[in-house]
Length: 324
Image 1 (cartoon, one colour):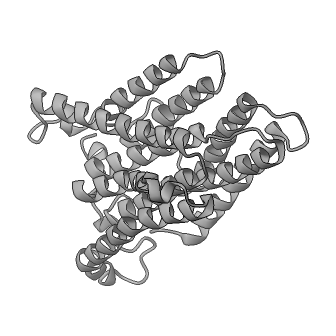
Image 2: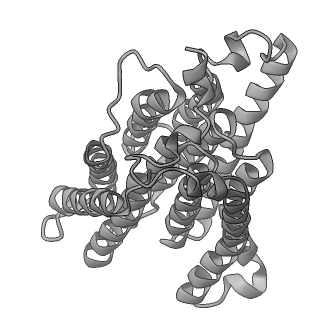
């Protein structure tokens, strides 16, 4: 069953390590550069995530045996490496985006590897269905990544990473209520490192004058959010509508780019962005909670009080674990 105290420990450890790493590497007293700040953010997120998942006891196996393992052991590390490369000024922008689009195209296939959707019997997709689903999923990930990065270049600020953190936490809670507890737990360290890294980078930028575009936090945030929703959709009971709503919610930040709103003060624009993003996320959470209470609460209530993990055996197992 979910352990709130353990989640708070993971959030605290992740946030402290991520922020401390960024501040130590970029340094508020040393001459800072955009490259150093980006590298500090990437390393801070990597160390924070590693510690957070260790606190949660999300032990990864190699080779990965399920979608969550592949997300944390392959997809996220590759995204971190790409964002580290992107921070070097001599690297052409087109080559960085080639790497990003390549990862976006490969991520759905990586996450579904070994599942009944591709290799099972009885419920698997046809070849044409698999190609179409993987192509659409990759295009969706690349599109969200590109639009949020573009918005960050047009109107930089902490509101975009914060919007991603809201969506990520919503995704984690929704995936947990959809029956995939381990998949939902992975959202807590990701949310914490996005917030802590963004705040630390903003502090350094404010004191040194080095611009912070938050491209690394946006990249890791989008990839992590997509991965959580993807495994929740195909290995849990998360509906396609809920998954799409959560994934696309951060794009509502674009509504503030209208001429009337764009000229307003940054704090007003940032606050409005977060409010716009929060509205559909609250609706999704409310619907997920209602569905959980209707379907699962009666089952959990009938479990013996002496059971160590009440009701956990009644939750559906991830599909990629069932076929193995």
